[in-house]
Image 1 (cartoon, rainbow, N blue to C red):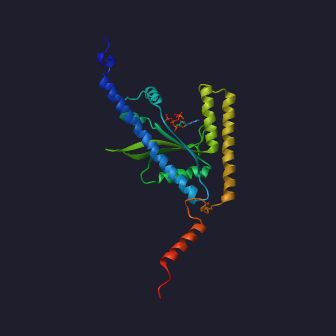
Image 2 (tube, rainbow, N blue to C red):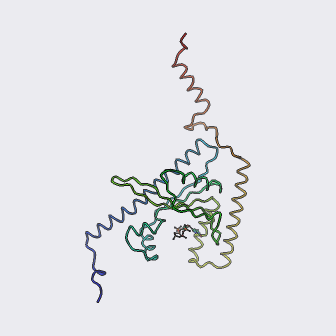
Image 3 (tube, helix red, strand yellow):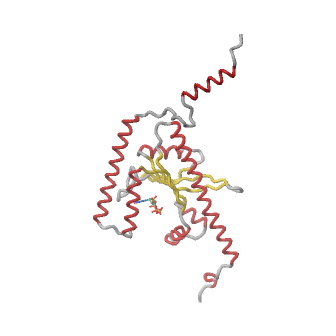
Length: 250
Ligand code: 0O2
């Protein structure tokens, strides 16, 4: 005989409560994304205004859909509790940070890792050790605090840091995988491996050129119209100050 508990329909109240719990669970990851996005945006603005070179090209964030989360829970045979899901599925919140050069990837990773409220749980360096198919990126699993009205949560966020060339390769490879339903013909697989090597060579050449142009020069003169004062603005400011303080007393 079938176990009645496994087939019993949940009550409307149960469903309402489950939806609220599920939504709250997903929202914490959205907040985690927002926290890390703000951190990256602050770094990006600091570099734009105060340094000669901005290492961050662009950032993309994605919250796993509830459909693909549940599909992963089922695929992995996980205990369907929110505690078990949050302990086992670490890519619910994801951020991709695309940098200009390989050195920028490590630099941005280092700048984020040393922030006092970020805990790095795991690092996977597929740049120093690319995957057999040629995939390169630096993956960091981090935890950030999210301050809610009544509690503080430590939310796990997956960061993928890569160069423009790595990103170009990975997004094409991703599309090709789906086109062939993950069964790549040998020729296509070989072409992808070769193009990954070409992308890595391009990164090396671009890094070298960048070094030649910039050297280690870090600070840049502020641009006109920028929030950072130019020499002319400073001179005007000093004149105003001098006028206000009046002639020196005898
Ligand atoms: P999607 O659609 O981008 O989210 P896990 O996520 O823990 O089950 P794994 O392999 O231990 O799997 O994690 P890993 O190596 O950190 O890779 C996770 C993510 O990195 C992938 O998420 C991809 O986004 C990216 N990635 C890893 N390997 C490859 C690769 O060979 N090619 C491409 N294009 N991307 C890769 P998902 O969930 O697989 O995909």
